[in-house]
Length: 218
Image 1: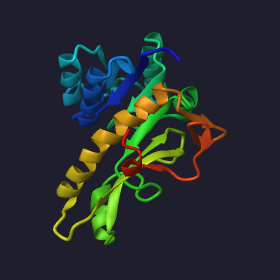
Image 2 (image 1 turned 90 degrees about the vertical axis):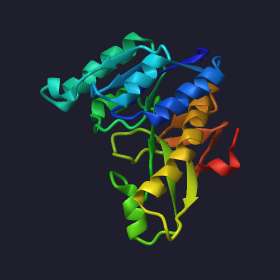
Image 3 (image 1 turned 30 degrees about the vertical axis):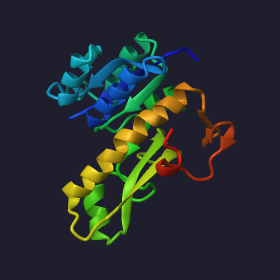
Image 4 (image 1 turned 45 degrees about the vertical axis):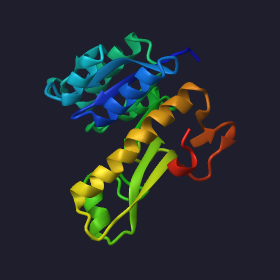
């Protein structure tokens, strides 16, 4: 695999996970390089984060396209023109077409703020509180056509305190996200991570359950 690994990051908003990936890149420039940041929203703050770091950006507004497939094809054209080897979804708030997910199968990651398969979709922090869960967390997974349903790679857990609300719980999860996501990108860059026959493989072995961040800090 080419080193440093060339990645594209797709965002829709603030880009705090993008910032964590940028910070890690600056500390480990030989591991991966962000070649492109794409946002479907021109006012996404993450674009400013990328520009400040000297990373090329593109705005591809989904509203400019008649349907999901044509929007995804426009993104695919930009990504492939840059020779990108890994696509990283970081708060990208669009459901992707099966065609797009198939094109990047095994080469696209997502981070989701819950312990999947619990709570796919939105409002995960409030759902965890409303259901009286003792813990919450995040999942990093390979992307497939099933929303938040691809094979799991890594999870991190946080304790839900009685005083937590959705905002405080989100903050706890974000802190773990910013550790977890650059780590998984690094594993992919180092050829430790593959998707084979619908299953995650790590260091040459199939994963029967996701890795846990507290056990895999390096």
